[in-house]
Image (cartoon, one colour):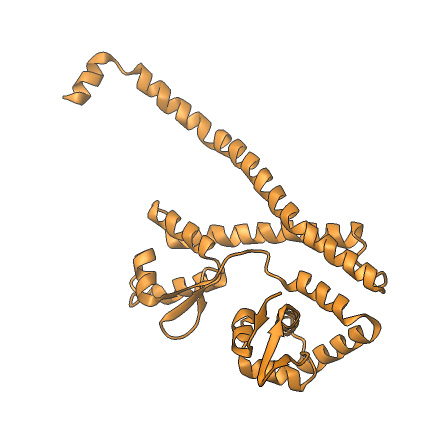
Length: 260
């Protein structure tokens, strides 16, 4: 199990040392294990911080979060609770976020930061998950893979607005797919609050969600590959066949003329 000092924990959770101490004061976060005068945190603290962050993002107040966690803990074993928290809040990707400054963005996308279009393009990049502003000239890259796809499409001649538009549509499609898997887990995995009353049932629920991770990704990869094959053939097959036919109909004299 990983061990963190408070500053390392804050970095891993995307939080701050000040927030961690405030959560401890409110009883939202268990105290660390002391080694001498140093407080050591583990993955259970990281899972709890991620849960708090998600609940805050959904509009819950700290007081409400404290009540929810307290009520949950009163009826369930804390270790079972933290195990389920970890499964629910762990990232589903092994990507490590990156960082860029304005000059690097200009190099990647060939956009003049002083141009009139630059602010709107940056807003679109943030809206579609390519970037997160972290100061005047610094940006966090949540998904380097997504940014790589965007830069490659731009390098291939596709405009940035078109790239952002398709990214938004794909994101909506992915949200639908994710919702289908969540509904599958909720209905057929019987992940209802009424059912999760014992440590064994909570552990089973955590294992069920964990099992979904590779299955969802494999299903999407396999189906996308087959759909891409079909769509490329349907969309480009006729054009490529026509181009080949035109080439084969060219006379030797025409071909010689072209060479000359």
